[in-house]
Structures are given as structure tokens and as C-alpha cells.
Image 1: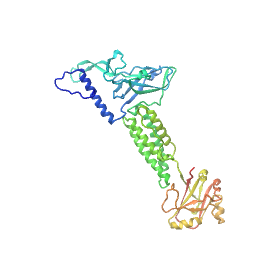
Image 2: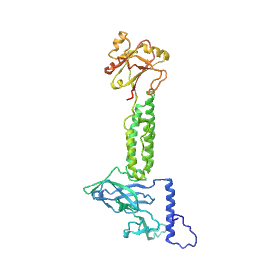
Image 3: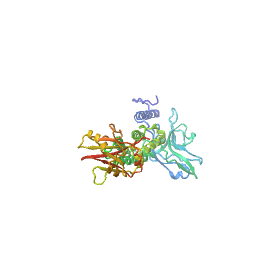
Image 4: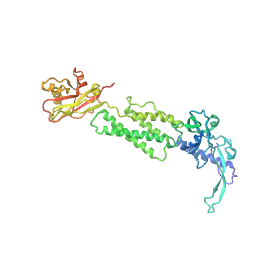
Length: 447
């Protein structure tokens, strides 16, 4: 009932209660409409502590703007002086200092003169000379104005019965100097009121760096299968979310919940493409009164997801011609562990031959082995030391190209271990293959 509209009518005998009731109605009306449309609309939009007084063992505000949890706005020092500095005991550790305001209580006195030093009234009254903005004479009058009775508090005696907004966390008091916890994030209505803006820049930079790396390595979608497709999906996601984060960074004011929402989406999408289980771990929920507690684990996850390159399960092995021959090729082994722990596949294409002809003739006409053994095999017409097996269903990690036939190098051959110490893998394909094209792929074994 106390928040209902005043029924104004002609002939009323106006009392202060009428205007007070009208104030309560307007404030309640605005708060009800605003809070339902914009939740978590309280906190700091700007905060700066007095570091000089911190050197003397006190916590004080140099400047601050924001909104208290009940919707009371404040602007320090534009509309009110900073609250009285709070002296900090030498044994204080890991404690939060709050900006406080008495709660509104039905029937309680809400105004008191500044000189009274009242602690529990919501507003302190002080006279100010106000000019008449309409009159050309600019006549002025002393008007009593009430400002929010903001105070700093940390102990139960200083915070009980008051609205609270976390201002700073004290890590310790060292040699009478207050040491603040730089990781603390106060409740905010603009991410620039704490370190969230720098966290956004950090994640944005990591995403851009990984996207640049993926753009170079995944430039040609024909050079891979499942891995390349996954890399392009990740590149697409990073390009999209980098643009979103850049937009947030350029806005004049952004609520932390919007940044949290976009961080969640980026973490979930990147987890699908980078984590082995293809799912994100349990993600934190948004807590406006504990921004550090919800942002830190999310940022740690994003930093982990955006570090390093995308793990590849396949790798294309470079094949080069031996001399001027169009029938002899070799791969110089640079990663012996890759040869030891991978299945090797040879993709063969020749537009002058049918696919069936390639499938039948390539295994019979191809000799494969250590480059140290190739001359002997070719000149003495010995059997291939590493047989080829046609595979009708190449691994899903490979991108199956049209007009190519796929063969697997037989790891069960007794000569396979020769490749572990060989300088390279040699290939010799007899007969005429005028339009021969070869690709050698390594598909890594799953651990």
C-alpha cells in the first residue's frame, strides 16, 4: 500500500506525506519496470580507490559511480563527497570492504542533518544554494537536499541492516599498508568497473592468434578430411566470436552478464571441437555478487581451449620424385614416431586408367621399402618389401577425393621395422602411368 499512487484532487490540503508518498510511488514504479526488464542492474559503472590513503592503512574511494541494490544511484564526488575512509586493522586478511547504504524500513525516519552524524538514516540533508534557471535574474535560494548516506564497512557491526556492494578485497596489511587483491571483481553494471575489460581483451587476443594459425594451416580444404573439416569449423567459430568480443570492447558500456553469456557460448563451441569428449566440462553459473567466482573458472577454461593448435589425427607426408624418373618417389622421414605409430595410406590417381585398373594393377606393379633397399629391389626385380592392400573404406579421418583409389601399406610385413631407422620410404611403380598422381597419408593410431 505504501507504494501506491497518490490520488491527487483539487482542494487537497498538501502535507509532506503527500510528496513523500509520491516519491515512493515513482521510485517503486521505475524500479519494478526496470528490474523486470534488466536484472542485475546494480553495481559499479566506475570505481577508483585512493591508493595514497591505502599506504596509510585506510580504504577510501577517490571516485565512483553506480547503483545500489535497491536502485539508488550514486556519483562520487560529483553529487556527494566520498564516504569517510575506513581504518583497517593490522591483522586483516582476505576480507571484503563494502559500500553500504541503510535499507528502507517502513515507518523509519529516512532523513537526518549532516551535522547529526546519523548512521542509520538513508539520507543526509545538507543545504545548497540553488539558482532559478528560468528567471533572468538568476535568483538563488538555499534548498535542503538529501544525499544517500553511503558508508564503508567490513565487520558485521558496520554492515548489518544495510545494502551492500563489494568494493575491494583486502589481501593483507603489510607494514601498515593495505594490500588489495587485484583479482577481485566488484559487482558491476559495466565491465570496465573491474578487470573484466582486460579479460575480454586477453580472450579476444588468444582467439585471434589461434584463428590466424588455423587460417594458415587450413588454407586448402582439399588437403585433409575430418581434421581439416574440424579445423574449418573451429576457424569459423573463432572468427565469429572474435567479431562479437570486439564489438563488446568498443561499446561505451556493457553489462558483465552479456560478456559472461558470450564467453559461455565460445567455451561450449570450442569444447565441441577441441576436447576429446566433444563436450564442455560443467560450466559456472552467473553470480552478480561474485563475479570473480563465476568468471575465473570460465576464463581459465577458455585460455586452455584457445592455447595450442588443433590436434591432428592425420598428416600428409611429402612425396618427391627420385631424379628425373616419373616412376620412382620417396618420402624423407623427419618424424620417426609418426611412422612408428601411424597407419600409412597411398592414394593413387591416373585419369588415363580406370579406377578398376588402378585397383588391380598398382599392388602388383608397386615396390615399397626403405630407400636403402629400393635400388636392390628394382634392379633385381624383387618383391615389394611392404605390400599394398586395397581398401574400399578408407579411414574417416581422410578426405576421400574423387578419381583416387586408396591403398594401405601393410604394417604386418616383417620388413616394416626397417622403416624405423631408414632415411626415407621409397616407392617404384612400374609400367606406364602417364597422368600418375600420388598422395601419402599418415593416420595416427589412437592411444
